[in-house]
Image: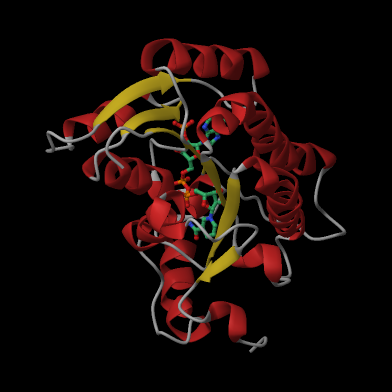
Length: 253
Ligand code: NDP
């Protein structure tokens, strides 16, 4: 990762935070994007490495003018963009009968539209250095779960965006992959409206729903993202990688 410039969204929390820290530890210059300055500062403070570095960039990824600014400032400061990791995302409960249009729009706007825009805006720079993209999808992109309808649809869209983009950009030397985690212990579900007690029960239930017998850690997903973003994965593109303790192999129970 030495000499590589990586943009990581959702870097203030969970999977994005672990990924930003790992890429920097491996030597990359990381532009850590999020809205929560305190958490981004904590990420930078926690980095005890002389190899890479973290540049904090406050931005709402759904605001296209803020993304334009983030991309141009990154290129101005560091001259290139080698890696784009799209981790910012939200979940909200709801089925086909009760999902509000507002919740649907919020999830599509952040989980899909902002990713599409980020890819388009970074593309000329990624093409220039034959860089790569890793999208954070979900087991909910490949499997269907009741009660999180719009989230599942948004992640299925990310899987297809990953594959279509990979096909189109392969000839230009740009790789595009996704990771599809099972339940990972982060702030996602609490921020999505689950209360502490239900979250505890949800994690306990994860012992049964994941054949490995536990929920995942953000650092475990970060390792896969870092591998896919590295030159070691030079022949991998269009892949949607399950990293889910076997969750995606199970049937409802
Ligand atoms: P967290 O809630 O811990 O982190 C979400 C991140 O998204 C935060 O850094 C937050 O930053 C950022 N974010 C949210 N809205 C915006 C916005 N409008 N603009 C900029 N940043 C935003 O969740 P996870 O780490 O779990 O989620 C990361 C990804 O992993 C998501 O795409 C999620 O769908 C996916 N995933 C998570 C799983 C899990 O069980 N945790 C399972 C499968 C997939 P800030 O608040 O600073 O803006």
